[in-house]
Length: 256
Ligand SMILES: [Zn+2]
Ligand SMILES: [Zn+2]
Picture (tube, rainbow, N blue to C red):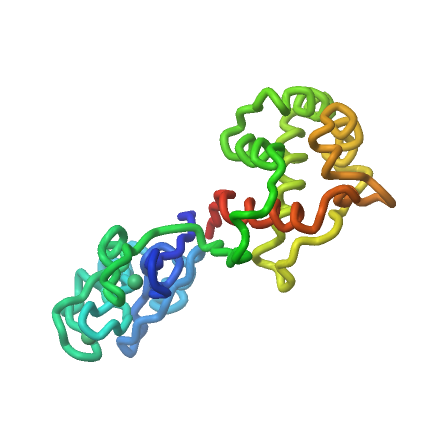
């Protein structure tokens, strides 16, 4: 399962399709290429060709098409670089580059920026995000989740949370960060006022003790009515600051 990436210019809004650069296809009885979605391409190959993957490959009925862009007219199309003539389908230019070859190269549109591979999660930040306040503990929690090394400021919290179960502090931190950041893949991406808690969830059992152990977290979070909420002292600017900071700096890997 490859991680899904986005491919875009770091200066202008030029983009190539997200994913991993292309797709497997099978050739049906009339010679048409049929996309075989990942995962499950073996199954689609069989459905389309009536052959197992190896036989279909030997019969030349499986291939890999790559996303390509014409550097002259910017038209995007898919080519099997092992089989197809490398020509633009629009203007017949030979200046065709695959997505994989494009990473790290100059953007064909603005010719200033570079094509970068990044997370598919591309939040739009508030214009004033750099001026907003962000509590240190937010950064500490984010770095802990990323590197799994507990910083001194969170040692007590980790000890308390992990006494409820191995790895439990990681879940506590992850749940808080997800709540504060908002869910990129949901309809409503806005940061919520509170997050769900369930008495049987281990991280929820530990949270009250975590708050008692670590004032920096308790300054941000209170538990009320079976949910956790932003503490009243957290200003709207701080809430936005936390959200924008996480949207800017959290690393996401989205797997297919
Ligand atoms: Zn072209
Ligand atoms: Zn560009």
